[in-house]
Image (cartoon, rainbow, N blue to C red; front, side, top):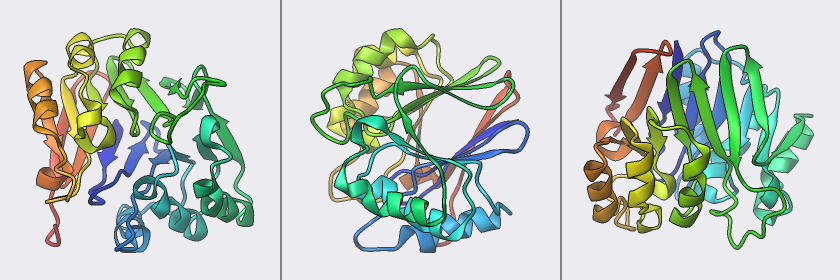
Length: 260
């Protein structure tokens, strides 16, 4: 089975992908100025799963709530490859991650639309964003977007891309999608009703902190997802959200810990 776990790291993103043959990719690692998410949540979860190394780590963009935990992971766990946004490669917020990778001699790939990650036969991971040599106005716009396909199953991991970028990507993805990770924690900036109607995801996942001060997820975003017929899962309510598929059938469930 392919397994995708949206780990509950509070107000942030951390997504663990287990390939059908047992390889592991970590997309983002959460982070906070108030808590060491990597030490307190992410590494304990990986150890609980019995994971002792990662085949790839992907940083969608260098905002603290996505990248900070990855620094701890690379410092303390063997990682074969680090993937980062090509459009944000020289962003100073990436320096701690790049320094940790250099110290551990982890090779770095700069990811852009049109590339593919081939981790094993039968599992396709295509990069849809950022666009090569695009003028990026902020980190969110430069987020790495992954389109994962396994037989009839498909998932779109969107980082924090804004609604305008979502709309541009709509014509590059074959509907319907099985799972969409809603960008930017379901903020107003992820409001793209036509995108959700066009791609008709079966499930959507919002990675968001409980009682966060930003008011995420935005009520209009939730309404748009419901109108599009999508089932909405949220880490603030459902805990870690796990999606499993043999490429045909799909199961999804949440896991709330005692400390949630």
